[in-house]
Amino acid sequence: MIRNLTRQTVLSYRTFQAVSFGDRLRGMIGRPFEQAGIDAMVFPSCSSIHTCFMTFPIDVVFLGTENTVLETHPACRPWRFAVWCRGAHSVIELPAGALAHTGTMPGDRLDLNAETVPPEKRTKYSTHTAGEQSTVCPSKENPTV
Image 1 (cartoon, one colour):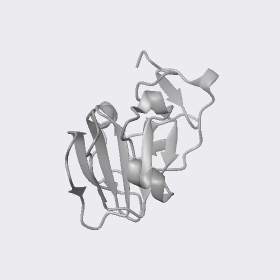
Image 2 (image 1 turned 30 degrees about the vertical axis):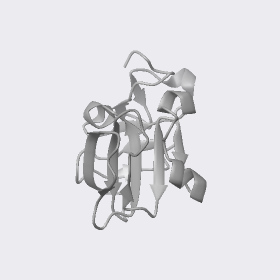
Image 3 (image 1 turned 90 degrees about the vertical axis):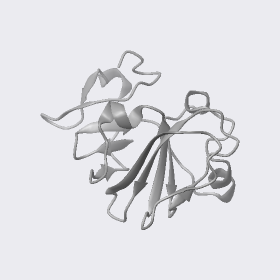
Image 4 (image 1 turned 135 degrees about the vertical axis):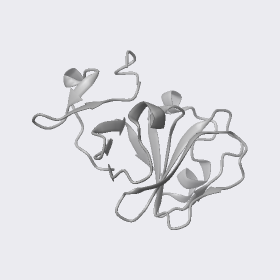
């Protein structure tokens, strides 16, 4: 799960870590998020991506070493040969609209290993720790958000 600690919002409940060469090379090519059963793909130790061969736009987040958002690229179009950020340590690919929905912007701090809220406890405003509420991105579990 990916949580924006600055804004107390959730960017992803079903995150995939692209660590193998094949996963990093393919990324989201040919598999829309819902079809793949995920709502975010994280590329650790990465500062650039491409959207060649993709058929849908994605939101892109570049993170520094402390998981601070350095740059965002909302609704990045397919067939971009290079999307990069100097100094980035990791990249997150999200469904288009996730950045706007959560208000995520440069300077925000993310937790890439946040605890998951059990599906039966998820609501439009899920409580993750005592007294904290956060909005969630639309997903299969939460299509009404």
